[in-house]
Length: 165
Image (cartoon, rainbow, N blue to C red):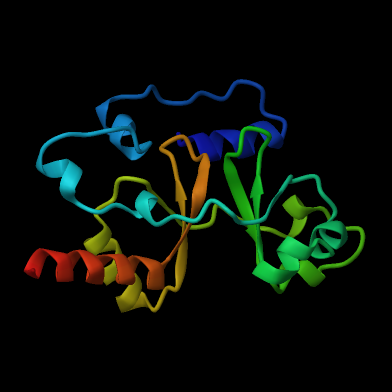
Protein backbone atom coordinates (compact mmCIF):
# COMPACT_ATOMS: atom_id res chain seq x y z
CA UNK A 1 0.00 0.00 0.00
CA UNK A 2 1.29 3.47 -0.79
CA UNK A 3 2.17 5.84 2.06
CA UNK A 4 -0.49 8.26 0.85
CA UNK A 5 -3.20 5.60 1.03
CA UNK A 6 -1.90 4.48 4.43
CA UNK A 7 -2.08 8.06 5.70
CA UNK A 8 -5.69 8.42 4.52
CA UNK A 9 -6.67 5.15 6.23
CA UNK A 10 -5.07 6.33 9.48
CA UNK A 11 -6.98 9.61 9.19
CA UNK A 12 -10.19 7.57 8.84
CA UNK A 13 -9.49 5.79 12.12
CA UNK A 14 -7.82 2.56 11.01
CA UNK A 15 -5.15 1.63 13.54
CA UNK A 16 -3.05 -1.09 11.88
CA UNK A 17 -1.83 0.33 8.57
CA UNK A 18 1.46 -0.79 7.02
CA UNK A 19 3.85 0.81 4.56
CA UNK A 20 6.51 -0.69 2.25
CA UNK A 21 10.26 -0.61 2.93
CA UNK A 22 12.62 1.67 1.03
CA UNK A 23 15.09 0.48 -1.62
CA UNK A 24 17.38 1.74 -4.38
CA UNK A 25 14.54 3.23 -6.39
CA UNK A 26 13.48 5.18 -3.30
CA UNK A 27 17.00 6.65 -3.12
CA UNK A 28 16.78 8.16 -6.59
CA UNK A 29 13.09 9.03 -6.36
CA UNK A 30 13.81 11.08 -3.24
CA UNK A 31 16.34 13.14 -5.19
CA UNK A 32 19.47 11.86 -3.51
CA UNK A 33 22.70 11.98 -5.57
CA UNK A 34 23.25 9.52 -8.41
CA UNK A 35 26.14 8.84 -10.76
CA UNK A 36 26.70 7.80 -14.37
CA UNK A 37 24.36 8.24 -17.33
CA UNK A 38 21.34 8.21 -15.02
CA UNK A 39 22.54 11.39 -13.32
CA UNK A 40 22.62 13.42 -16.56
CA UNK A 41 18.91 13.00 -17.38
CA UNK A 42 16.85 16.01 -16.19
CA UNK A 43 14.21 15.18 -13.58
CA UNK A 44 11.03 16.93 -12.30
CA UNK A 45 12.61 17.64 -8.94
CA UNK A 46 15.05 19.96 -10.66
CA UNK A 47 12.29 22.40 -11.64
CA UNK A 48 9.75 21.73 -8.87
CA UNK A 49 8.74 24.88 -7.00
CA UNK A 50 8.51 24.17 -3.25
CA UNK A 51 6.66 27.45 -2.62
CA UNK A 52 3.02 26.45 -2.84
CA UNK A 53 0.24 26.77 -0.28
CA UNK A 54 -0.55 23.82 1.96
CA UNK A 55 -3.13 23.19 4.64
CA UNK A 56 -4.14 20.50 7.10
CA UNK A 57 -7.06 18.14 6.42
CA UNK A 58 -8.79 19.59 9.51
CA UNK A 59 -8.47 23.24 8.44
CA UNK A 60 -11.70 25.05 7.67
CA UNK A 61 -11.99 25.76 3.96
CA UNK A 62 -13.23 29.30 4.64
CA UNK A 63 -10.03 30.07 6.58
CA UNK A 64 -7.82 28.45 3.93
CA UNK A 65 -9.57 30.38 1.14
CA UNK A 66 -8.93 33.66 2.97
CA UNK A 67 -5.16 33.23 3.05
CA UNK A 68 -3.28 35.54 0.63
CA UNK A 69 -1.01 32.73 -0.63
CA UNK A 70 -3.99 30.51 -1.46
CA UNK A 71 -5.88 33.36 -3.15
CA UNK A 72 -2.84 34.15 -5.31
CA UNK A 73 -2.18 30.50 -6.18
CA UNK A 74 -5.81 29.51 -6.75
CA UNK A 75 -5.55 26.13 -4.99
CA UNK A 76 -4.08 24.48 -1.91
CA UNK A 77 -2.40 21.12 -1.33
CA UNK A 78 -3.79 19.23 1.66
CA UNK A 79 -0.98 17.54 3.60
CA UNK A 80 -0.65 15.55 6.81
CA UNK A 81 1.56 16.68 9.69
CA UNK A 82 4.43 14.86 7.92
CA UNK A 83 3.74 16.72 4.63
CA UNK A 84 2.26 13.62 2.99
CA UNK A 85 -0.05 14.73 0.16
CA UNK A 86 -3.58 13.53 0.91
CA UNK A 87 -5.59 15.87 -1.31
CA UNK A 88 -5.92 19.13 -3.13
CA UNK A 89 -8.38 21.98 -2.79
CA UNK A 90 -9.12 23.31 -6.26
CA UNK A 91 -10.38 26.82 -6.84
CA UNK A 92 -13.98 25.57 -6.95
CA UNK A 93 -13.48 23.75 -3.61
CA UNK A 94 -12.38 26.97 -1.92
CA UNK A 95 -15.94 28.31 -2.04
CA UNK A 96 -17.39 25.17 -0.41
CA UNK A 97 -18.84 26.92 2.60
CA UNK A 98 -17.85 28.22 5.99
CA UNK A 99 -18.22 25.04 8.01
CA UNK A 100 -16.55 22.53 5.69
CA UNK A 101 -13.15 21.08 6.52
CA UNK A 102 -10.50 20.58 3.83
CA UNK A 103 -10.76 16.77 3.99
CA UNK A 104 -14.52 16.97 3.39
CA UNK A 105 -14.30 18.78 0.05
CA UNK A 106 -10.78 18.10 -1.25
CA UNK A 107 -9.91 16.08 -4.33
CA UNK A 108 -8.37 13.01 -2.62
CA UNK A 109 -5.13 11.55 -3.95
CA UNK A 110 -4.25 14.13 -6.61
CA UNK A 111 -1.97 13.00 -9.43
CA UNK A 112 1.71 13.32 -8.65
CA UNK A 113 5.05 12.20 -10.04
CA UNK A 114 8.27 11.18 -8.36
CA UNK A 115 11.36 13.35 -8.23
CA UNK A 116 13.33 11.01 -10.50
CA UNK A 117 10.99 10.48 -13.46
CA UNK A 118 12.73 11.35 -16.77
CA UNK A 119 11.65 14.90 -17.57
CA UNK A 120 11.43 14.56 -21.39
CA UNK A 121 8.94 11.67 -21.08
CA UNK A 122 6.89 13.50 -18.46
CA UNK A 123 6.73 16.72 -20.49
CA UNK A 124 5.60 14.77 -23.56
CA UNK A 125 2.76 13.17 -21.55
CA UNK A 126 1.77 16.52 -20.08
CA UNK A 127 1.69 18.10 -23.55
CA UNK A 128 -0.41 15.24 -24.95
CA UNK A 129 -2.92 15.58 -22.10
CA UNK A 130 -2.74 19.39 -21.92
CA UNK A 131 -1.63 19.31 -18.27
CA UNK A 132 -0.09 22.60 -17.10
CA UNK A 133 1.28 21.51 -13.71
CA UNK A 134 1.76 18.45 -11.53
CA UNK A 135 2.73 17.76 -7.93
CA UNK A 136 6.15 16.23 -7.27
CA UNK A 137 6.46 13.92 -4.25
CA UNK A 138 8.89 11.49 -2.68
CA UNK A 139 8.12 7.76 -2.86
CA UNK A 140 6.62 8.20 0.60
CA UNK A 141 4.15 10.78 -0.72
CA UNK A 142 5.90 13.75 0.91
CA UNK A 143 5.40 16.98 -1.00
CA UNK A 144 8.49 18.31 -2.79
CA UNK A 145 6.73 20.98 -4.84
CA UNK A 146 4.82 21.68 -8.00
CA UNK A 147 6.28 21.36 -11.47
CA UNK A 148 4.91 23.68 -14.11
CA UNK A 149 5.14 22.31 -17.63
CA UNK A 150 6.34 25.71 -18.91
CA UNK A 151 9.33 25.61 -16.51
CA UNK A 152 10.20 22.07 -17.59
CA UNK A 153 9.90 22.94 -21.28
CA UNK A 154 12.19 25.94 -20.75
CA UNK A 155 14.80 23.78 -19.00
CA UNK A 156 14.70 21.13 -21.73
CA UNK A 157 15.07 23.83 -24.40
CA UNK A 158 18.07 25.36 -22.57
CA UNK A 159 19.74 21.96 -22.16
CA UNK A 160 19.15 21.12 -25.82
CA UNK A 161 20.57 24.49 -26.95
CA UNK A 162 23.63 24.08 -24.69
CA UNK A 163 24.22 20.57 -26.04
CA UNK A 164 24.21 21.82 -29.64
CA UNK A 165 26.93 24.41 -28.94
